[in-house]
Image 1 (cartoon, rainbow, N blue to C red):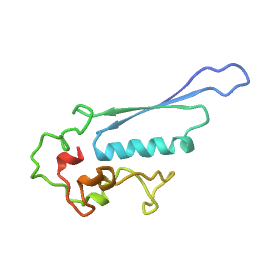
Image 2 (cartoon, rainbow, N blue to C red):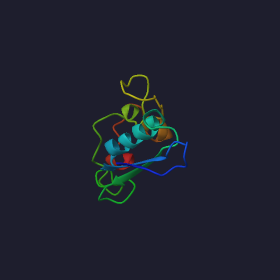
Image 3 (cartoon, rainbow, N blue to C red):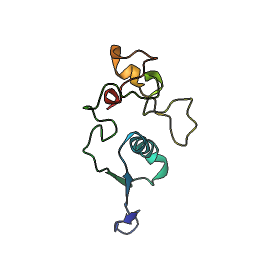
Length: 122
């Protein structure tokens, strides 16, 4: 959805773009990251982007990654392969925005080949 604001004669009107992402888990958060990284390429100059994240769980780890769950519930991916960021190995539209893996972010708490608990990811 977009709205065009009135502008003085001879100037370009401001464009406001609003959208909703349903689900604020890892995939929804990744969509948000890609929208923010790509906004300068996708929107006209001066446009404002508003993103509404919709999720029934409170902000934070959400239902699946809640921190109070059993430590016996493990992720199915090793810590060095878990990230919300892009790197040169990712084939995607928009700019690459590298960031830490879960292993790097957690410091010395996890080895690169450890299977973290779901609660740790949360």
